[in-house]
Length: 215
Image 1: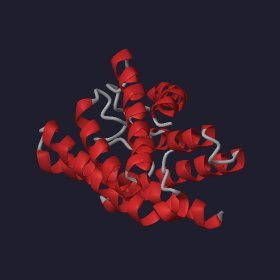
Image 2: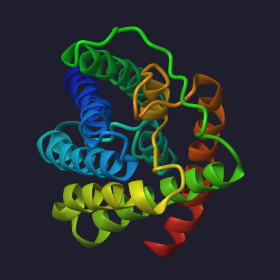
Image 3: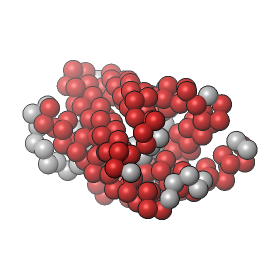
């Protein structure tokens, strides 16, 4: 159990380092071109996902995401105790990753995001679809090509940064952690709760729809 929890902690921290760090670097180098900054953010995140899922997948199944852990719990593949433990270390790992990125770029460690545009019905619906898509990729990949799951998730998230209006958070730990970074990838803390609700709602929808699809 300790090894699994440590893997989830490290993996989630590394994921947030890539999300926040690439957002800071991309924003600085793009000189106001948000498209270039988002492209850098998406590519770096996708690359990191491929790495951490490949390396840590055999230890903890590489969730790095409370929504994914909840989905495995609903499928009876994760106990309630392990679900709670996974969620706690994922949240802690996410915040540690944000702080590490701030230190790396010589920014104040403790920040609160002021990014106000990540809200509204369109973005909430986007989070449902983004999370459903992620679950489709994971469980469909496990059924069809388990060895390809790291690449499938990496490709999906890289693309979903661009085809979803919310830039595909699809992860309560990532959403929570990004609330504590007033940088390109941040989200105002007051907008976090509804994003998380939409993500978890997608898990419930996905539990029934994907179970019927991947019998």
